[in-house]
Amino acid sequence: MNIEQIMPYLQVYGYWIILLILFCGIVGIPAPEESFMVFLGVLCGAHQLNYSLSASAAAIGAVSGMITAYWIGRTLGQSFIRRFGKYIKVTHERWEIVEGKFQKHGKYSLLIGFFLPGLRQLNPYIAGTSGFSFPVFLILSAAGSVIWVITFVTLGFFLGDKIHVAYIPLLAAAFVAILLLYKWFKKRHSA
Image 1 (spheres, helix red, strand yellow):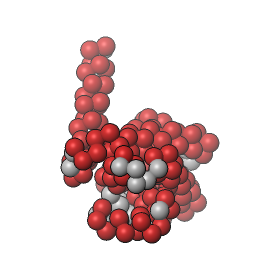
Image 2 (cartoon, helix red, strand yellow):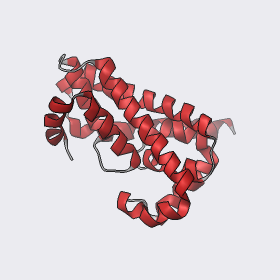
Image 3 (cartoon, one colour):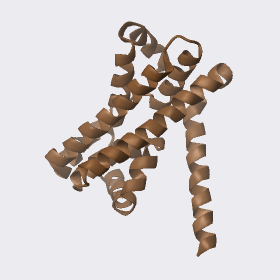
Image 4 (cartoon, helix red, strand yellow):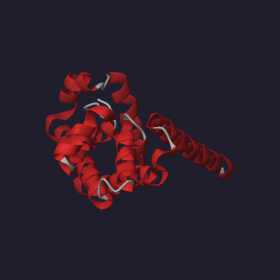
């Protein structure tokens, strides 16, 4: 699915399609989340969409996806995820890696995991299967989704047509890499 395919649906279904696309992306159904949110920001900047309604619909979609994935993990368990995960590209190896990191950095993973494709899709399932506290999960997921949504919608709003949408995932990855590198240097020099 790409932006050109989404535009007619956006015109017909409005803010509901924003919610649906972000929901699908979070539960693991392929969707262009970051580039779509930047595109929404561009439309908001051009006064074709309302910024507050667009960002709210995106955040509600993301949080709804997180909650759904959490409860799938919590109620159906790891065996279900491992059995059917292949349909949303969850391999056994990927699950093991992310689960190990989640056990070590669960709270941070929920907050900044939105900025890392793959991690944001696996985090809620792992939180559910590991018995992570739902109230804490909900607060961290809501905060992380709002930060994530506002970042990308605002980026599109202010940069508009100055950047090509295809570069958005690369910019996001560069931002996260710089952040992780900074934390690594800080940790290394403080020890």
